[in-house]
Image 1 (spheres, rainbow, N blue to C red):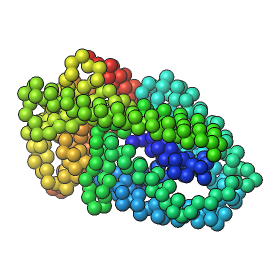
Image 2: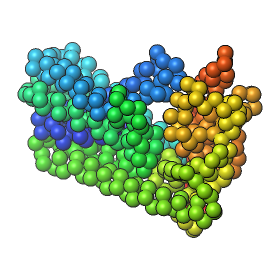
Image 3: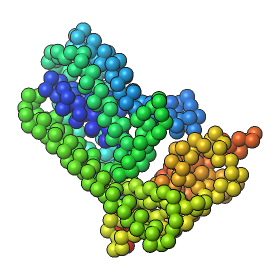
Image 4: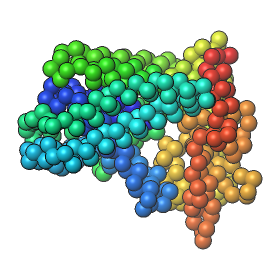
Length: 407
């Protein structure tokens, strides 16, 4: 899921594991650990676009990584506190700065949430909401500038389990999205994807975040602190169960729609659209054709509005075993189609996420799309694109909201 959600989850798990010994530092270290798997984006600096696409949510999002990397980071942090270095003013200034940077990241993530959904009005709401971070930021800054910090005595074993749980919950949460997570890397590139929640869903994140903000204002030994942390985990987990229930119901509607329309299919998938769990996109495979459409829980009829999309494998001369095409097919879980762009190049479209405009079939209508070109006998990825353009985003979100309300 998005970075904000992973920071919040890591902070919450950190508080449960070591909050009674670390206080607000459990939020800090947990939030940092919760973002570590996503540092695989650093690979973008050294890899081709295709390599980075395969690498993301790979080994850094696996059980193997959580088990092994936790040994290293636990050793470093344990030595930090055992040596007393954390009491040095220069080091405290660095930690305070990192904390401030983390909170600023959360601040802008919240503003982005609201801005994407509601435009400038949403951005102003997001700024007002994110202003809640001024209080914990001020408290943390004051704490780290105190004459002496509270002594920390935590064993290496405790640190290991702290980082293991704050790291492993990241890929586990990601596996509930449609993007998929390579939980078993490096031994398998199979991507676990339960498809029941969007990669960004404020209904999961914001109540959890509010509970953690309340908890952060309380004393380390105050039992109410753990109550609010568990409350946040409970609310988010209950919402996750709600999305799983929705997934089963939506899959049932998809199967009924295909049967009603007499479409013979080999498989289908459905997943929620961005920022909500009410509007779902579904796609079914039927030979060389896919049937893709949307369904809102508020629709008057319990059926998907499906339209045919040809695979168009002839556009790549049926080179489905080409290394680039093979990797893109793997990424899309074999839900894909091709079309000829206006510039004469071929575009590979990932059909799992549906279309921005359900009523047309242009090159800009697909959420995930990849421009490919045949060079020296082999297909190459020229550019990957995702989502609508910036200037179209407000209109797209308005259309999404209208469609979510049902037809």
